[in-house]
View 1 (tube, each protein chain N blue to C red):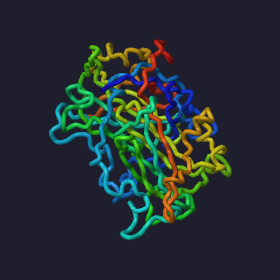
View 2: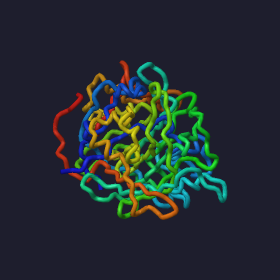
View 3: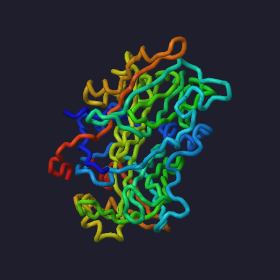
View 4: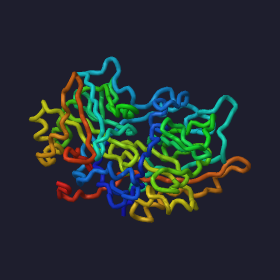
Length: 191
Length: 240
């Protein structure tokens, strides 16, 4: 009989104190906030910026969320084998605009031992006040339609919801907005 | 290294929507989660080395304090072990904690409670579990505080915990409460957890053998992360 996982609780409105203290003005404890920098100068592959906003059921932007991402390196390695690429990032939504932003590399196709090809994708994990257990979704790229069509996760999403998992290329950045409720509700995963 | 993760028991965790916790009403997804077997993306994760840590990271009493000063409040040591669902210790877990001060006030721009800030208390700490899965930190007892969820609503004294295990699919944020706190059964965030047994997992126990005479009281808080067991994935596309 497996032991039960410890139950989740909301990260609450002051999550920054624990995860991004420098962001919220608590300086001098940690030299920098973890996950703020994902790439070294020599990181391989195409540099991209992923940014977005999170909207609640009233259409208002969340300004108190923290987003973490995890992804393959440009060659598709998970965990990344590129010594100049972390694969992991953490960003607080801007306190005024609610924008989260990651400077990263475009992930490659990950091929696993069982022969599955995983389309280029970035996992996003979202916590905030009012979210009782972290929400997990995925960002895919619309110009990789062929790979997306055979990706074991993307292809399992009902076709009418798949567009919500695609980033939009706009003004030089990849834009990925997250809707917690409503007609554009983002698909969230239990993976 | 990338072992399949057992599906989360969603009836053990709080549901996304807990109407008595008002903030969840507009932030809870309305559609079912798309449940699928874990992939390499969830079965791997970032590694946090011990060189991430500074010497005072696990001492909230002094890590924000002026030289020679200490945070105000009852001195506490919090210790425990992080295990997987098979009961095996998990080493290398990044444990990040944050909390209000001994007056119930957080050091945050959005915080408006009239209780005072402590100039010597920042409220954050972090550690990495050792080979036996153990962690430990020093802090002051956080106070209960009022919040605007409902008239006369109070949060029980608590410490927030963030856990980053070896697999990103194990990622967990939770809160630790203190044994005997009469506010625990009154809190809609705690009571969003369906089972009383699950709530008990979040209640730290007074640990007298590890308390230090004339110095601090210790509370024990063990944590179980997802993983370590093989649970056959039911081959039905829930939520599809």
